Image (cartoon, rainbow, N blue to C red; front, side, top):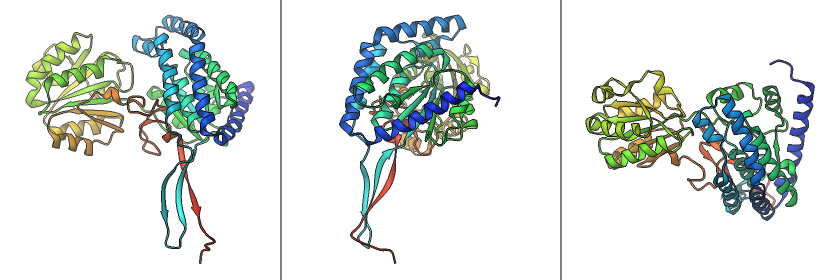
Length: 423
């Protein structure tokens, strides 16, 4: 790495040290104070809506000038409904049970010692993310709820929006009696500053990158701090021989069309050969009518010649667009083998009325979220009852799948005795 400017070096060092000090204070405050802070943060977003939307308009104008694609622009865009949703998510997080101090397991040893595991905050968490400014509020809220401080480094395309949101949240923390430095935004988009942040292992306990494959690899290769990867979402739907075809059409449509630019959108649809002749023309009509470009293998194109040919690369691809790969498979084994080869451990779904097929799919597919007769779009912290999510981990240590409040804690052993000594 090239030498970073001295002002970056001092700024990042100061930011990290302030975050560590703030983490110690928020970890000690009570559940009621953290809840009050989150409710105040929600009100601050609502009160600052005009400023946030004005900042977002500046980001959108810059994105249009830079030629940002439609799907990524959709991820960047805020409107009154989305700001209200951010505030609602903070209130939902506030209402969740407080994990800090919870004894999650306890047992007694033969010598009379009572041994337990208690949830405690992780400390300082750095979130590095792209495009979606709602992550600024969600990440801050979840970290505060779990007794952590957070350092946020958003993408350049959302720089103005992220600053407006963070300013509102920091003001609310001060009003609630918590240090504003519980939430900090890296003040520059210079990549050199991010590399400096990834070296602060004495102050930062965990790094969570959210974004494209390039960002994830960049962070994982350069960080001295443990990293939980939110890797790409190459999600699959397998339409089984025993599928309800109308259900399959509806689920595939929702999973691809509702928001094609998000990581839980389906990217490949696998169709059992016994119903491909019937199902594929219907799929082409339904998705094609919504502007989806379908790319199929030879077997699929023999049934629907209008499909574009799929390359080997397409089956590895996270399109994040109105594009979807299609493949005809012989059976459930072939579908699982395809997912194992091309998948990214994110989210997979099976459409079937066969209980045994559904159970095998759940047992044998190792991705972080597995759905039966439901859209891949449900792989989301809010939809799964977590209030919001810090990301979707595709790393099996220490969390896997959508990460909520509990996943932002660790556990320590607590040992209670009555004078026992070890012999």
